[in-house]
Length: 233
Picture (cartoon, rainbow, N blue to C red):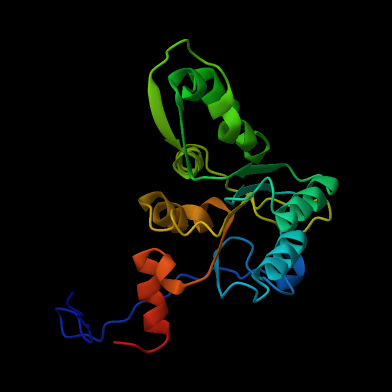
């Protein structure tokens, strides 16, 4: 990589760049703004077992999700007392919750094929859950076996159906369109679909939360950026 610094343009004049002025959100206008002032972002929590990551994650979700759909990838999603509690609390508040024990599922075409009609249904966050869970709907009678990556499917939907306006919860505060969580998914964190989703999540008004035990479990790009922030060469 070559770093080029421009002090003057080709005519010898001083080279100046005017910054793009974008108004910043007021934390008071954001759900959970007192602890997470940016509603759309990637959040990474790295700490050893027993450090309290799950408690922090629970607090972050209950304060910041607003009316967002929550999609969680957790190996013990159906048995972990912590996640059973989080799911119960979110559903009691009216949030739709979808949990997957793995990032990928191997199923037949009859369980994974999406029809054009289903795609046309999706016009905003209210139908996002239909796209996520549509992998379990019967669309064809084909028996061909294939593997579906749920995070990759979410990425496709976001790119195809962008949302321009800021989503708001019942209180009128800004909240994410969707919150995606990967908790203790070390086996999958270096999958290309994770880095791909991280690169678009903020632009698609999503909050992406990763909780893991070691920084080297994360995609290489995240590890590299963390080294830069710590001053490593």
